[in-house]
Image (cartoon, rainbow, N blue to C red; front, side, top):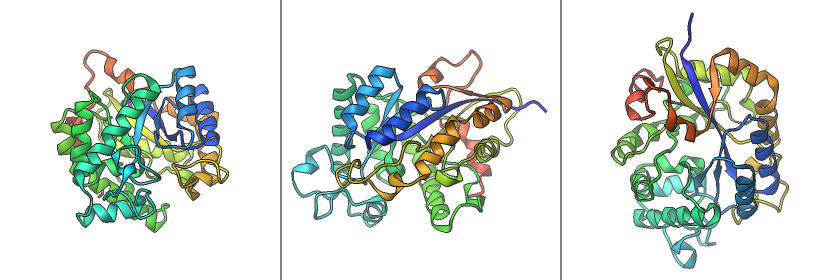
Length: 323
């Protein structure tokens, strides 16, 4: 049976987090396994990462960070609803809890996002190709609205919608990871409205929540793509994004965003992702499945008759999701 054609963006997150992570990310890009990166402008290796991006012409977006390390905007100069008593962001779950409790001042979120966008321009000399969110903070209620407003003001069109169809049924995920993935998906659904009203675009499908770290394999990446594209008419060309976190593991105290590297970055799972992405097995499997790797920039030049990635093409996936 003929399958839908897929143009796949493979994005490596956390560029600029530490030199070892960056080394692995660049290695994956030069091997053709990664097609774009998302840069943390408050990362310990931000400046060297920006130089690597320029040297190797790596399509680079902003990994907007509101949850880990120190801010780059006005919040760093004094008290802020975004920060704890030590002057650091509130953390992956702490920021979510503060947003849910109504304790986060959204104008302060807007200021920090604008500061990170400006910092990116200073580092790279241009606007980012896309902006997504570290630990998916960009789809949180309220935050998604000011995020969309800031991107529209800066002329950024592409973002990530981390809605992976069927992730709630991925039984190999540990209970906390699956619960977090389902929460991210619920937030992503609600973010569709604000994102579309401000002219943002995203790929037709997304995978990466079910294939993170130890769970990444050629079989699971291929299966995740098949799952999210199930029901698509044969012969159609769709776009998808694979979120990845490859690299050589961080070695403390080097790395991080002001507090040193976290356990996620120090884990052997970062090297596992790098090896899966660069091994011939995955690329052979993707080619057999009719998947063509590309960068987000390439999606602006889709062939005549192909749909532009936007919220409209997402509706069938929303309606039939397991979540």
